Image (cartoon, rainbow over all chains, first blue to last red; front, side, top):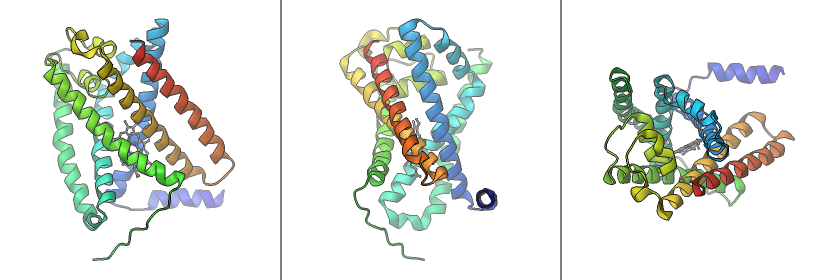
Length: 128
Length: 140
Ligand code: HEM
């Protein structure tokens, strides 16, 4: 138990910098998508086969801006970060520039996600 | 500057799943891009809120996008080509995601008796969701 506690504590104190943040967001986003995709498939099955209202209930949650905004953050981040991982794994020489590539990734992410946020806010404003 | 040596991995379950994660990741990016572009080509130009865009990108199924108030989804979408596309996307998405879940779990539990048991459980969950998704696609 003591050993386990220590690992957690060391984990919390470990300062991996920008690439560690990327790893953490990648992991959280992957998990979030597994839960989202799973519930979504299950709900559409219930709705399609048994006319259950569960799918509609979930859709109302899924379509709300408060759900959309974090979901798109994680989806876009996971997709871009996954692409970076694949790229660096395929061309290991680029690992020397891992930090720079991670910054470049943020430079792609920010305008892309900014556009999404813009669409979400525009949707709220126009009362969709 | 350090030189990094890259180990040559042997064929193992772990290596195959590592490879699969990368291939399915690239496949999801590619299939998503194709679906989104084709949605625009085939006339999905109105009412493009974010949920609608997501539906076009990852699951271009007439039954699915009908929620999005886009007219005549049955034109061009309700055919075997898009059914196969959806099955492939669903297969890659579910397999990639659940294998990722397995990696995360095994990172934290280590090599205990739980490891093979949870592997079995995840396999059953994978089977369940794959069959369910294919069923939903073919029945719509
Ligand atoms: C959009 C295209 C996607 C790409 C390019 C992508 C790429 C990747 C890559 C390369 C990894 C391995 C990370 C590593 O080895 O450290 C990974 C892990 C993972 N992915 Fe994806 N992925 C995508 C979509 C998805 C989707 C849709 C889901 C959920 C259904 C998902 C869930 C996960 C999970 C749970 C992990 C494990 C995370 C971890 O080990 O920390 N991914 N992804």
